[in-house]
Image 1 (cartoon, rainbow, N blue to C red):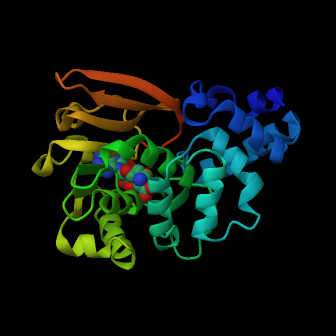
Image 2: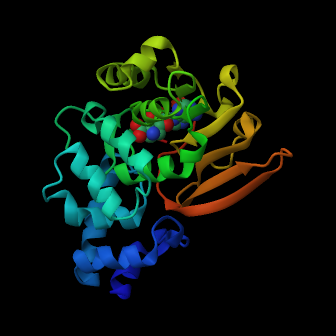
Length: 298
Ligand code: SAH
């Protein structure tokens, strides 16, 4: 069993996986959904990644291990938002009631392109060489940020794409808080506004506590700084300074860092202004880059 995991996860195997998914849980999942032999897995991996590469070499946003595990439940009865949330709870990705509630409240189907299988635990292309992240990554980031998304707090979502996470943040911080999305592709911002308007977060967009802006997220969004929570939905070569500057003491930034090999970093700003950085897990996100580079295909 362990060999199978190593065989297909290889360099992307999250070294600190146990922090987000206790090993016993992983073992339980693998027991429930036995993996095929290493050779099958290697074949599957290479065939799926090459078809991805033809479309977009970064056409996924997720943690490789979950991405593979998901194949064993996406085709089953997971066809409802609640079912998706229950699966993520069962896998130990969603650990709190609050994250489960917000993911149940914000229907993912409103944020994926028409005709996509909304509840599959897989990232999906949303055009412009961007993707909506996989549900397990959304859940992981919500879990990591939960304590910094209390009512009245300020949250920034850099690379807001479809607006899904911004909508979740807005519902968590409520009408007295602020949830700001920054996305550099104007067409995606227009699309995300339409998505949010159809969702449970629509009243927050109307009252102004949720806003989605066109901008270069590497600069953050100073207007509503400092932020209790900052999420970055694209991988940066290094942590942008303005984001650390716009983090409140006691606040938390969650950001994928790296190029081909990326790690999800958790940056906590201490009360004295110093920062503590730790690695949560290995991930694969589209790059945090310039608009030109993204539209060129990186
Ligand atoms: N978290 C979002 C989108 C993830 S894809 C979701 O799940 O829907 C990453 C997004 O970051 C893309 O939409 C991409 O256009 C955006 N992006 C990349 N570089 C950026 C930058 N410098 N400034 C703002 N947005 C950026």
